[in-house]
Amino acid sequence: EFEVPTAVAMMSDLVKNMTNVGGDDDEVTEIAYLPRVKATVLEKVIEYCTHYTKEEVMTPIETPQKASKTEEVVQKWYADFLQVERVLLFE
Image (cartoon, rainbow, N blue to C red; front, side, top):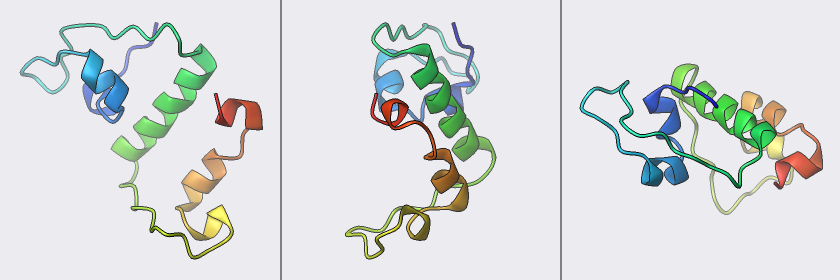
């Protein structure tokens, strides 16, 4: 079970569509159950959403991409974040 601030959780459309949010920004009135999402994947999603909620604003990714390297298209933190095992990246 993960406790996540509402603003962080609401970055995910999947969670947003499964959760009822109360009037207070930090109050979730219902827990979202994600039985098909592995804990390791959910931890990475929470890390990503937390970073872009609390640390810095995500820069939109320009499309079509004109660069061949990810590092040239996204912020440094994002490029570093993607440096995980390929299996985890595509789960």
